[in-house]
Length: 437
Image 1 (cartoon, one colour):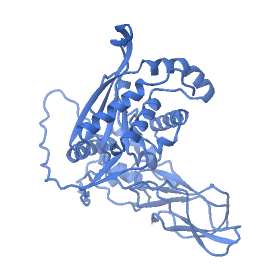
Image 2 (image 1 turned 90 degrees about the vertical axis):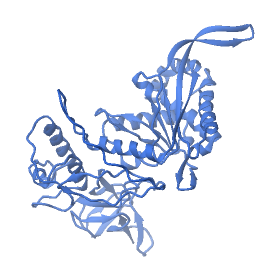
Image 3 (image 1 turned 180 degrees about the vertical axis):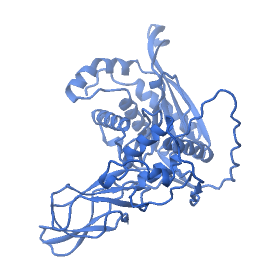
Image 4 (image 1 turned 45 degrees about the vertical axis):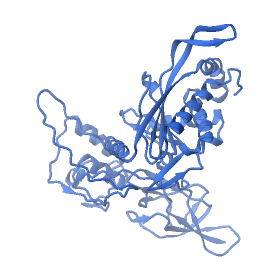
């Protein structure tokens, strides 16, 4: 027999601790491989922790409501392995990604703790939502909970926030400032002046930003302060690509059970161009350039709320077109239903945003820090274009689209940015209309 330690998993690179919500097993219980052992909560997500081995739980090291650092043992499991030495085995968790900055906006709230209040426990995720929405602890304690022991779940507080915005009475209390340490960035910048108050007059509607919109706003402003943004444009003839997709889409869906969109084809071309110009797949740390060997493509996805989220396709260069299609569709579906895990929106090295989805011809996207480039694809339109033939130039109806690349001019100059963008267009224009999938 052997003993192994179940380790508190890392549920995202910025997550340093988690709170135990509920033990699903008790001491003496038998667990199967990958069977959930407990439920935990972070400030981003609530999730179950599976067992990496089959065996018997001999000792539980922490109680419900305890806050446990990532990497610390939470239980001892006795297995049927031959060795008798105790081994520390981490529970299955996302592969750690290179560090990246995460925006931490200053908020005003009367909720500043993750410990039980008034006899009822609140998870860090619920407290974080309450903090971002300006919900006081007194108000929080009035929300009915549907979780275990009347615990307020994420669904409960989001439902309350929705009702609150529609006109429900709001409990007003003197706010307490939650002070956070300033985020250290790689470059010095002068203190930003406070935004001046906007005078509200006339026939207006005041809409409070939700938590995600606040984070997006902070991240975008931080990106513009950090990087010297430059945007280049090219127009691409994607007629062959469009004809190929029209020809194979029905057979593709029948065989693979997935619809094929243009997004995985764009990602495939981006990956090829990154291999040709690897410096585009980098980040900046002070005066150091960190060139990423992994090619992890983020794809901006619109949510029903109107916000955006960027799930990441890890190691996109190792996947064929069918694999890319399945992962793109899966991430997009789960993004819309709010089922993404923290590690699935982290670790991107380059981002694609398809503004053509909204009928736009082109866009000038903001770089997704700490990356150094982001590409936007516009809508595909039929247009007259000049074609060169052995018999002379002719005008024909072609499927045309604009591509734009915003890049960080600190390390990506116009020659590199323009050449990379042109190479992506070249790969799309050279798409083989007779390609097999």
